[in-house]
Structures are given as C-alpha cells and as structure tokens.
Amino acid sequence: MENKIQANGEAKLTIGDATYDLPIYKGEIGPDVLDIRKLYAQSDMFTFDPGFTSTASCESQITYIDGDKGVLLHRGYPIDQLAEESNFVELCYLLLKGELPTAGEYAEFKSRINQHTMVHDQLSNFFRGFRRDAHPMAIMVGVVGALSAFYHDSLDINDPKQREIASIRLIAKIPTIAAMAYKYSIGQPFVSPRNDLDYSANFLRMCFAVPAEDYVVNPVMARAMDRIFMLHADHEQNASTSTVRLAGSSGANPFACIAAGIACLWGPAHGGANEAALNMLNEIGSVDNIPEFVEGVKSKKYRLMGFGHRVYKNYDPRAKVMQKTCHEVLNEVGSGEDKILQVAMELEKVALNDPYFVERKLYPNIDFYSGITLKAMGFPTEMFTVLFALARTVGWIAQWDEMTTDPSQKIGRPRQIYTGHGQRDYVSLSERKTGKALTNA
Image (cartoon, rainbow, N blue to C red; front, side, top):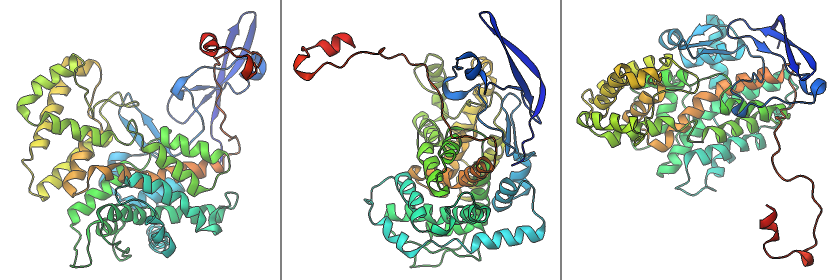
C-alpha cells in the first residue's frame, strides 16, 4: 500500500512548561488529523479516547463516510450509484483492487470466485459437531475459523499470491457456509452451489432449494439480495472491521481474522440492529399505536430502533436504497399492504417531521428497512446477522489486505489509564484475616 497522507502544517501542544510539535496530516477528503505517535516518547503522556471515536487508527483508501452529510463512498464511488448500477461481485472487485473492472477483468474475477464456491467435503462433517439448535452465528465463527485447517496453501500473509487466493476463497465460500448453517439449523440437507447462477441467486438457491423439487430463483429476490450484500459490504473502521485489523496486525492468518470479525459482528450493538428494529415494529403492531409509542420514546419509556447512527448525523444513504428494495420485495410476495411496512412508513414520516427527532438527528438507518425485507424473503431473524457477515466479508478482506501491505502498520496495542490498586505486598494465606481483602478493595 502506498501511503498518501500529506503534511498540512503543525500544531503545538503545551503541557506545563513544555511545548510539543504535532504534525498535521490531510487526507483526500475529510478532517485533518494530528499525528500523536511520538507524543508518549516525548511527554510521557497518552491520549484518552474510549471507543477510539476521535482517533484514526490507520490510513485507508477503501471507504469514506461523511456522517454529517450522509455520504458513503467506496473507492470514491457513491453507494447509491453502485447499488443501482453495479452488482455485488463487481463491488468486490472494486473494494479489493481499487478500480472498477473492465469486461474481461470482471469475467475472469467472477470465474475465479465460481471455481471456489464448494467447500472441502470434510468440512461438511464439521457441522455435525454442533447442536441442531445452535445459533447460526456460533456455527459461522467456528466453521470460518476452521477453514485455516483445510487450506494450508493460503496462510502465508507475506505471500501476495496466497493472500489473493485466500481472499477469493473467503468471498466464494462464505455464502456456501452461511447457507449450510441455515440448512443445518432447520434439519434440511445441504444444497451444493451452482456455478451457472449469479452470486446472490446461487446463495438463495442454497438456502431455499430442497432435493424433492425444482427451485427457480425469483429475479426480484435475487436483485434484492444482491443490493443487501452491496449495502453492507464495507463501512470504514467500525467495530468488526477494527477487530479484523487488530487481529491481522499480529500476523494471524486471514481465516482467523475473518472469524474474529464475525464474532464481533455478533454483538447486538453492531450486527443485530435490524432484528431489533423489526422487533420494535412488531411490538408497535399498528399505525394507530404510533402516537403512544412516539410519546413513550420521548419519555424514555421505549427505545427507538433503526433510527440514528453512530456515524451518520443525516439520512443514511443506504436507507434510501433499502427502502426501495423493501417495497419491491413486499410487492413481489403480495404484501404491498403489509401492516409492518405501514407502521414503518408512518413512523418514518413522524420521526422526520417531529422536532424532537429532527433536533436529535434521529434519521432512519439501513436497519430500519432491512429487517422487514429479509423477513419477507423468508429468512428467520437468527439469520439476519449471518447475512450481514456474508456481505461484510469482502470489506473485512479488503481492509485486512490493505493493513497487511501498509509499511507503517504495527501490531495493535491500545493503552489505558490504570485506576486499580497501587503496588502492595503479598500476604500469605495463613495471615489473611476475614474480610481484609474486601476492606482493602
């Protein structure tokens, strides 16, 4: 990775009688950053930033977000343009390679993915070690991590060719593994991939086809699935992406790093938001109940799920595409008058016009609509985060590869403010008095 940060002046930090020079760097777009890498060595002080919300942990050329303006760019291309004009496989190429492919490059890339959609036969036996009622995300963490035990020829992170084949394998095999996790949870046989189908159509077939009858992929559903994958493909340095980078900074193999990302995504504060939004809409139940619910939100009686975002302080650009996709799916399945969608639309309307929500910039985010869409497509709520992980895999891989080739990257080692006991002497067990430990705590 070629570093592209540019010097943009210098700031002076005064602590007591000492003054320290902090270089200022400017990215292509976005805010400038202070370089504090030498601050500890010079001043014997750290910075304090819980959650790292004001800290740039890396230089990246993949994704840019402007939360105040509602902008999401992948390699410079707006997400709404990509979602409307492109497809997930092409977006994978863009995130990995940095540029949109030519027709020949696209055909070759798609062919390479198709060649790796199957998983090792022994990996199928791995599933049988899980209980049938195991959460699909628990299975995903275990099985994806286990890939490193099957593909020894793509574990050397210092070999560009091995990094590339590992990337292709993960993009190709994660849908197969996700579908297998779903099939296993409902007691149905695994369905092998079909390489004559598009990426998203193939995934839907692996999830919903059964040996007893033919299965024809609905093109509306396939397009919706493809858009959902695109909208979740990468989102800058979020919790799971940072986890992948942190794991990768130790030199861990790519399969282990992606498994770490899946584990982080499993957290309800990260990947479970669409399920929470769907549950909220179901609890409201009817448009008639919205006024009481809104008042409950204002009085802190209820939580408003699917609105607002850690980064976006404007309308989530992905939500606009997701709203359109939601309508298309519900119309296709005959649920154009679906009560939950009615609740969603009315709640959105109220929130966008109520001063309470407007002042707090609680705009609808992608999770507001994606849960409804996935439910209408036939996925149980337990699979929502699995689908998120499937889509985000390419972003994790792109970020991992970028980190691996960044000459300035070091093993992650956040610091802390220690607030525990000062140094104290060990007391032998026979000399300890009852309650002494509690008294000193």
